[in-house]
Every structure is written in structure tokens, then in C-alpha cells.
Image 1 (cartoon, one colour):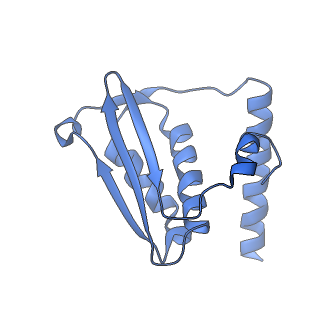
Image 2 (cartoon, helix red, strand yellow):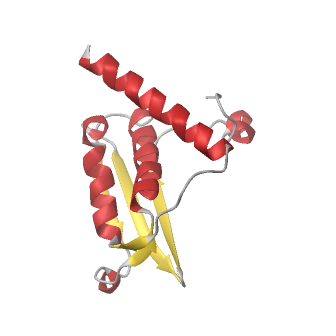
Length: 133
């Protein structure tokens, strides 16, 4: 019952998010944040789904770790958790999932890498379409 309630809560949250995106009312709250903290938290919050996988976090330019960057940790964390959970869902147990961040000029880049099958070429045009998948 708890699992089903949790699943329903997630679905409702996703529906609200989609409605906010469609209505262009998503509010971004930028604040100085530490990248490594964001990555660690995304992995921790996805720990149940990631069980059975080896998760590696890499932050390039380690001297930059103490230098905060401006981003919305809640929104970016949500994106990273979604990508991590997809990676866990579509890769074999025991496989490695890598979460990587690096600074490129004044931007931050994030990557989630796995050895899953990837997206079928026929489905690529539909990746950003709602309710497909």
C-alpha cells in the first residue's frame, strides 16, 4: 500500500510539473550551490532505484569544488534523479552508472552515462513528446 501511495504521489507530482511547464509558470530559484553536493544528493535520493548498480561521481577540475555555482538545486536535482533512475531501469544489475560534471567557460555540463541499450533510432524524434515512451 505504501509503495502504491508513493507511486501515485510521484505521478501526481509529474503531472503538476508538466502543467507548470506547459503554462510557463516554472519558477527558477538561483542560489550559489556546490556541484558535488548536488550530485551526491541526487544519487542519495535515487539510492533505492540505484541499488545493484555501481554509481561513480566525477567532478572535473577538482580545484573548483569549493567554488559555488549559481543554479536551482531543486530543479536540477530533479532532472539528474530522473536521468539516474532511467539509467538504472535500462541497464543490467551490477553495471556502472557515471554521473559527471564539468565547467566549460561560464557553464556547467552534467552527464549521466551507462551501458544500457540506448534509445532506439525510431524513438529519438519522440523523446521530448509528452506521454510517449
